[in-house]
Length: 174
Image (cartoon, rainbow, N blue to C red):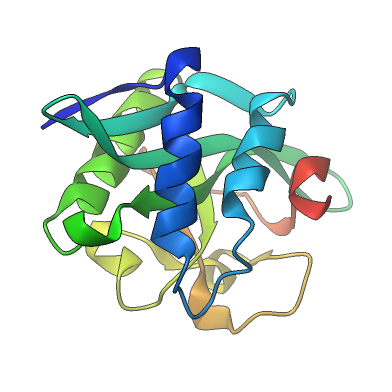
C-alpha cells in the first residue's frame, strides 16, 4: 500500500471512495464527498494534507485535514480538522484508515501544526492518541456528545493555553 498526496487526477475516484465509505454509515449525513469538494476550493485547504491510500493503482482510502480556529474572548489559535477519513467498505478493518490517520499526523506535524480536532467514534480514535476536547476546555460550535468531540496534540504541550470554541471553515456549514 502507498500513502501519497492526492492530485487533481484523483478527485473523481476519491469522490467515489468517500461516497461508498459513508453510504451505510449510521452517524453520517451521506454528503461527505460534497464537503471534500467544497473544502478543496477553500482557503482552509492544505494540499499536502489531502492524502490517499492506494493498492495496486486503486485508491482505497482518503483522509483530509483542513485549517480551523479555536477562539476565546481574547485569543485565536490555529488547529486542524480531521474530516473525513474514508476507506472503501471492502477494505475496511485492515488498518488502512489507521495508517492514513498516522501519516496525516506526521505530515501535519512537519508542516508546523500542533493539534487536530475531530468529531468521531469514541472507541476508534483514542487508539491514535485522541482525547476528549473538553479536558482542554475546547468545545464544538454545536451540541454533540462530549465523548465524540476529540483532540490530539501533535507536539508536547501543543494545546497548552489553548481553549475556546472551535470555528470550522464556512464550507462545513454549506
